[in-house]
Length: 311
Length: 205
Image (cartoon, rainbow over all chains, first blue to last red; front, side, top):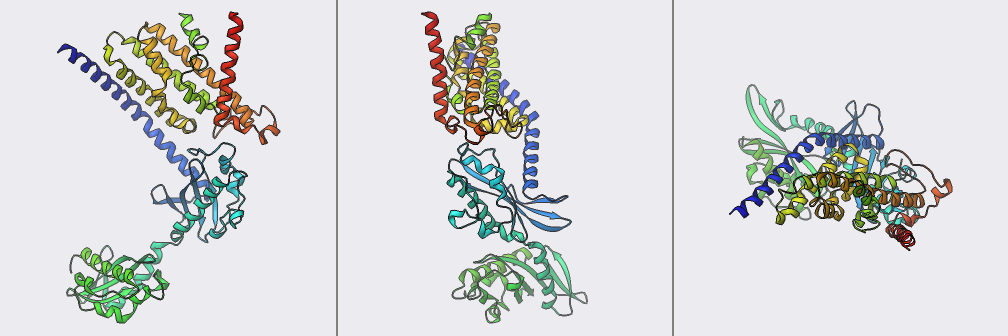
């Protein structure tokens, strides 16, 4: 018995002391480590998009920021990575609202490309040449673009340029001030559903149309994920039945194709929805050639109505 | 007592004579500053693990000694890792995985098992310091040779000091690149070991 107890006891004590010690060290160092990481990040953001007094607001954690000054969007900064020769090459890129690169930074830390060859993508001359370039220009000269590759490190250079270009493509929709333009488009249409009524905000993206203390109906805004992207739908409901539907126009950011997706905006199709309960929108037929868009519309109507909670 | 200390540096130099702990030596000795950072980490871990192991050597059950050594060593390695991340982030990024890997560095486990477990606290600490400095010296010499030849600088610090331009501008533009790559590491360590054997053979002859 004693043979079993003593070793157990010793090991348990050792483990407890070790964990206690580590807990203390962690407590002391972790704020510092976090602070370093934040400082480093802000430093990097300032390098690729240097604007005096600008705010760097995160849109996607650790990936995407928008640069704003006095409420005006100046551009975005994104982080993107691409497999290089021996490691993933991470690029931090600042893009202004015209789609031109303001600055590119490739951090040395964590990069393990070949020293003296692939590592040279972190040299200033390589990063400088991205400045002012548009998406389609961001390619190596040997791939038909405008950038010089690091001699004898084509793979690393190509990975870095691809990371920049693909990132620009992926995040360019954030160059527009999405929320602002959204505000404009639906505000204008709210009053069209119930003429002469007063529109009162009732909840998040939900409005009531009131006239002479009498509720005429409810309007809600919902979004569908279509073929080309997100689009907004305004639905007016009265007595549990759809009274009218408005889908944002291409000018207002409707992203679907003209030939097919846009057909969901036509009155002949939208008429089918009028008079039914929004919960039953799923029963309406899809438009041939625009199934994804039609499905997205129906889903948006149903999910938006759930949010309203009936009437 | 002093002999224990000197032995760790010269006669029992872990890297150049005993040829243990070669993996981090080859990987991290790409620059003198990295080598110093790694050396400091190893000295710290080695000295303290030797101290603890030796102080508790009468309480540690024989059949449990390896797990306990590992707990002790990994605790100190984790402390080094945290502190480096907090106060020397550049160095920590450069050494990367080789700091946590000190846990399985055979120099440290070897000294704990082979020396500290059997000797008094004072001797164990001196042995830890000696072996640690021996390791640091070896890796620092290698880092110096490799950095000067392979990069044209000496003691450059990532994100800080640019380093002494030992061999002039021409060398900065066209350094002997492969000295920084793995083959350079093997070549340098081979010459160092060969040199030591040569002098030893001549002295005893």
